Amino acid sequence: MTTEPATTQDQTYDGLFQKALDGLHADGSYRYFAELERRSGHFPKAWHHGANREVTVWCSNDYLGMGQHPDVLGAMHKALDETGAGAGGTRNISGTNHYHVELERELAALHGKESALLFNSGYLSNWVTLGTIAARLPGCVVLSDALNHASMIEGIRHSRADKRIFKHNDLEDLERHLKALPAGTPKIIAFESVYSMEGDIAPIEAICDLADHYGAMTYLDEVHAVGMYGAQGGGVAQEKGLEHRLTVIEGTLGKGFGVVGGYIAASRALCDFVRSFGSGFIFSTALPPLVAAGVLASVKHLRGSSAEREGQRRAVAQLRSKLDEAGIPHITNPSHIVPVMVGDAKLCRQLSDELLNRHGHYLQPINYPTVPRGTERLRLTPGPLHSEKDIEGLVDALSTLWDEHGLPRQPAHPT
Ligand SMILES: *Cc1c(COP(=O)(O)O)cnc(C)c1O
Image (cartoon, rainbow, N blue to C red; front, side):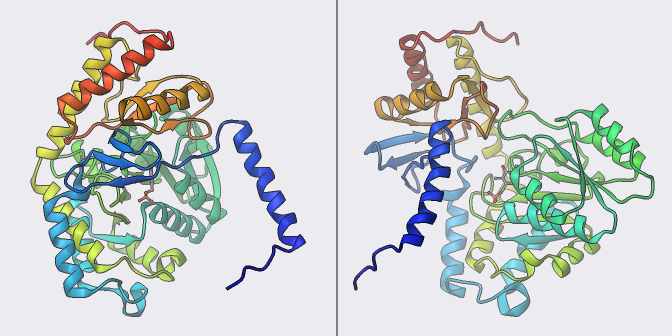
């Protein structure tokens, strides 16, 4: 087979694409992907093809290592052999398998809700649910936290509903917006529990109080909390006994639960509404049954076992205390996310490269536009499978680099 030479027109369009890419290079926000080979049974170790060495991964969202848990792998092997590779269709046209139904029941039970609805990703669950509800409830207004994830922002935008952005976790600002809206207007307050870049946690109860007072629905993204918080891994709302006060709890099956997919848990009527009107749900092939089987095993395991959550808390506490001893500046927060602040895009990338190539620690630099300029950082997510030795090795490497680059140390946080 021969390749046709590119036409002039193709070249013209490619020039336009390249110009946009050049802009990303110029402001340091071009994204380079690390080519990893995850090694099941050895997480958090992986093979890094760029560095050509084994590395310890510190920035995985497989927070609890469930992506290699024997229960999960066993369930997936079994379901693969039983059901084959794919779902065979959209949920409506031959794609609903027994595992999907069982998983939806399990997720509803996990959150104490009447019903749950599966999506192919957490991104889609936010995009479709917010997009559908806000578009189809006449006059609906969405109140959205300023730091909400792109999937919520895009879903709200797609709905074309009126939107008010309130200052991050700011109850006064939220109330100011609520007060300004007519009492009879349908409203949704959309927010997250654990915010992934700062690791701070929303005042869920106070937001629910405002929602009750002003007659709003609440939509909580618990993507960075499910599996990890609450007695059964139901998230921060579960931990605080607030699940019944939220209209919708949304989660991913790809982070703490270690596989892939997303969902909402809510009333029967709300889930049925999204199932019936959500285009991005209706017209897309269902998750492979083997994926649903693996997630089902993961959710069941984490509902019954606290060992992974305890292991994660141990690793987070160890890492924080060793960073404090070494005076490496990091943000204090109540979650499992440990942001080590660098404050400069080039330096952040350089530290990340040196950690990788010289010390075998993989941490993706977090730069603009993911975080504001001047707050560039290395975001650490230690988990139950990081040993004390891994943690010591990482902090020693950071400490060496801090010396070499003459970076400021910080006195230990008061405890
Ligand atoms: C990752 C993420 C999502 C999307 O979930 P996926 O399952 O990865 O598509 C949604 N919300 C937040 C806050 C996230 O960080």
